[in-house]
Amino acid sequence: MLFDAARPDAAGRVTARPLLRALGWKPGLALHIDVVYATVLIAPAPNGAHVVGTREELPLPAVTRHLCGIAPGEPVLLAALPRQNRILVHPSNTITAVLADLHARILGEPS
Image (cartoon, rainbow, N blue to C red):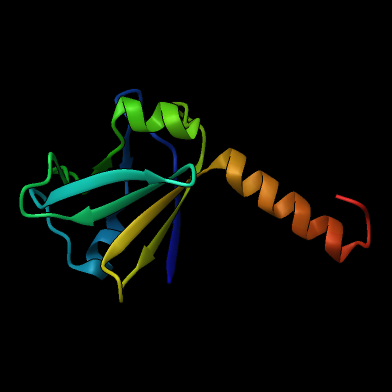
């Protein structure tokens, strides 16, 4: 698993060069984008409605951003899964909740 962080621009694009290159995804590659458990799931798809951008960015459609609570400029965590040939985009609110719980367990505090 490979990680990167990004901030969506006003149009919902996130630059993901290192992850795209690790997966071999080139500009113009058709993508299927879905939401699973408030996380964006991106996978290559021959008839996908979206594409990798010319500047090696991933599109996050408005409906997808809304469902996941992703706002322009807020950080997201990108996770590439090479074996599954997928990228997951985790919104900052999910990462905050997971880390708060983990930190509470580490420090022996109630979450």
